[in-house]
Length: 123
Image (tube, rainbow, N blue to C red):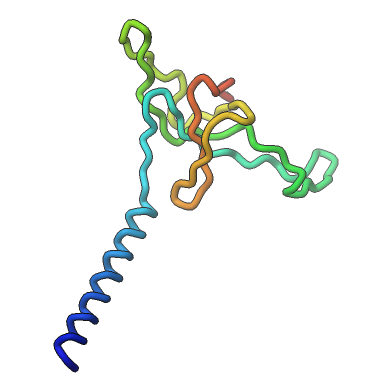
C-alpha cells in the first residue's frame, strides 16, 4: 500500500467520524424559542369517534391542542419592560388552527407559535 492510499483511507475514516458526530449532535438538538415564541408538540387526536367509526388520515383535521416543550423569556413592552410568558413548559394548550411555523426537531413535528396565538390552557 502506498503512502497516498494510506492518507486517503485515513481521510475517509476521519470524514466518516465527523459525519457521525454531526448526526449525533443533530439528533440531540435543543431549541430555545426567542422572545414570546413557544415550541409546541401537537397532540394526536383520537382516530375513532365515540360511535366506533375510524377516521382516516386524509379526513383528519389539523390538531389544535399540544404540549408546550419550550418557551421564550417574553417580549418587551412599549416602555421596554419585559412582559413574561403566561404559559409554562409542560402545559397543554389550545392554539389557532393555522397559526405558527412547522419545524422538525429530532425527527418529530413541532410548531413554533407566538404567545398571542395560544387561545387557552387546558387544565
